[in-house]
Image 1 (cartoon, rainbow, N blue to C red):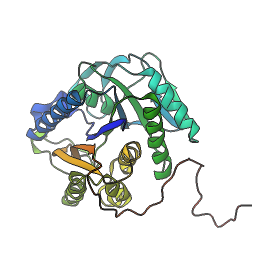
Image 2 (spheres, helix red, strand yellow; image 1 turned 90 degrees about the vertical axis):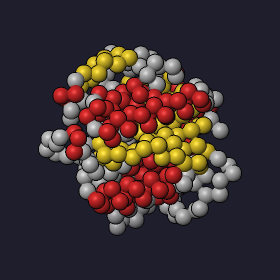
Image 3 (tube, helix red, strand yellow; image 1 turned 120 degrees about the vertical axis):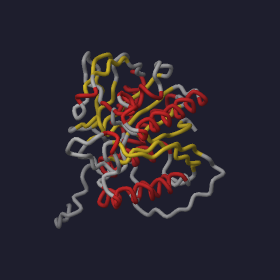
Image 4 (cartoon, rainbow, N blue to C red; image 1 turned 180 degrees about the horizontal axis):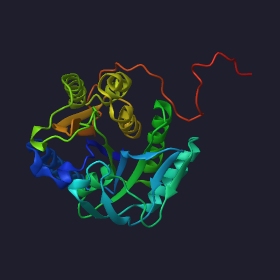
Length: 303
């Protein structure tokens, strides 16, 4: 299998720029260091990211600049300062991914121009798990209007591109779990999950992920988002399941779970394991090609 491992990581800048501000932020940074060590052990050809902080409107975008190099100040946390970044992107894979997405009916394009604003989540993740650009990376954005079906097809297109390229790939979903942030300034030392309800839902999802039950978590995404304000409705989990395989046959590991400015920040690893007998509790339909909005509320009959 070409997708040899998957990870879920947070994308807020505190673990990168201010880990000393809160023991939990330092703990997340340490956990991301463990992910870095695991990726180095795997020694993949490609690290492919789906980041909820790269928000797209029309269609889907893939980063195709071989060396994005610029400066970033996070839009929410200006006081943390500037990140100077230089990334190593597999431009050929980006083109292949874009073509695979179009083949499955999606609207997609690559972006490659100097100064394109790479999102905070991608920079934080790559800075901490691939700091020396040892491995080539790929980044795809999160379309804010895409539903479950469209997001699944985007993930399957990624799998198509991975298989056709023959690259041993690590897939990373850069996302929060619960995503209610503090809207007023807090003392960083007092950071906590925004509500007990959010914390309880986060822990339930992490219990399932620790058991390797990725598809069960994907099936719970809508309910979770209704109850705990899931980050972009947990689209990153849908994408991760689609690229890795929509089943529960994984070895799961929860490296860490902390509050990150009120949000639920988790570091999770998932490794495909055919010897695992996954409990099949999911029941939503599967989708292979995107054929547009289904107009599920329409009362008109198509002719």
